[in-house]
Figure 1 (tube, rainbow, N blue to C red):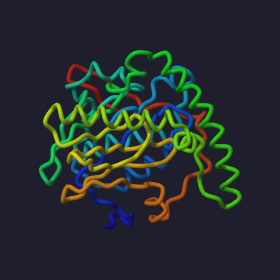
Figure 2: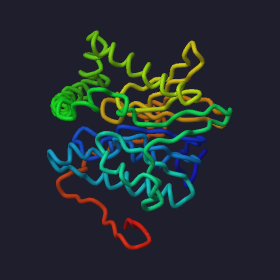
Figure 3: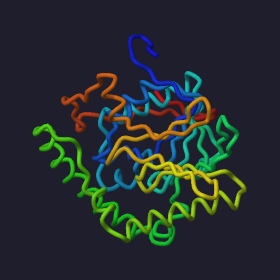
Length: 284
């Protein structure tokens, strides 16, 4: 469908995670463009939307990150129910669970009922990651190493783009070749499926490990991971009939003719002003 000449995509529900606003490698411009082109009843922000760890290390907040915030607020104002479930990189928001900030509801976890009646646990997933739970320092050190890997990857992909080649990911290649990484991902999925089973639910939707995936398991449970907005641009969507699908947003945006703006410079920009009063939080 089109709206004001803009090609739009309608879904019952959209789930996104691991945008990492404030991190130099965040693909915020693509995320803002995606938000501008979707219509949905509910939008779940499934953790690590803002990267507090990266902001503490080095403040990075370009215009595109402001655009993401404004478009999220606009969706909330125009009737989309926006639910923010913090992850380990934005865990400072967890104490606000149960509150509504500028029309966005904060929740530690949620149970989402699909159109076909299935009930799925929605959580970031770090709660079930033993490295994060028992050694935050080790987890943060891993994040800093990942930062440098992403920066190197950006240089390589810049060269590949000039040569007319597609994107390539160091970390994805490493994950596929290192047995321990594959074992971790498999164990992560198993632990989350066990939690859904314990709660008598039909499955789980999560983020955290940057691996977009939908798996209808042999035991009937559904495991779905939203992916991320660093190594790839992916979202999990629910269609009107309850069917789940992983969307390659980069390909979707190409379909609309969208192209990134090469003139955007992060050093000139600031975060949006937020006013707080007795009735709540209001962004301007």
